Image (tube, rainbow, N blue to C red; front, side, top):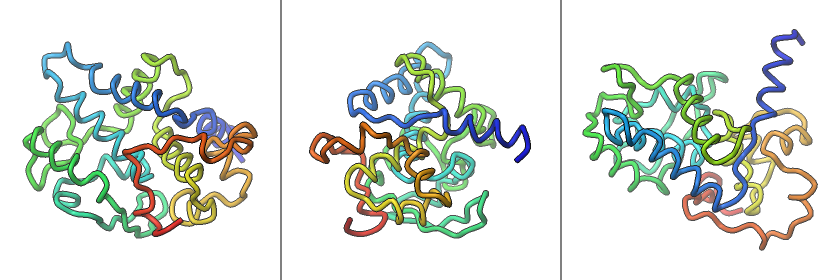
Length: 216
């Protein structure tokens, strides 16, 4: 393993999921309001919030999310995508956020061939660097210094697992991490989490994760 690869690996594991419901709500609020004073009004805030919600509800990598176009998801319960990193084709279930997506597309006045998460520069999608920056900024607003683009996938995985989902199914469909201890480490499962009873983990209304794999 090269020094750069090892640095990247450590950076990924230093980014954490959002484990508490109130903290998740605070974070979403920070995303929505952080651009209220800009000349674009709240357009960027709405985009940033929808992108985050999309990420934590689908588990997709940010590199795949930013490339999505409106026609791929509008008025659909699911869609198929070929992952950029793995080259694998996956079916993504979005029934649980279909209404939110429709409202977002309408409010943003997006057309079928537009990028779902557009940049301020016409004809371009928001970059992964921009996503990283607004997630980090929202994290700092909430007193978190461990937020990054992997927070979305980790939050998805964390809550899927803590609500009774199989780590094996989670890995097979999303994480593709070889060793089981590394799978739990990636999604932020520590000894304290393991010792908690399932009832101590509140069900998050924005997650309907059974849509991904059927019944737990």
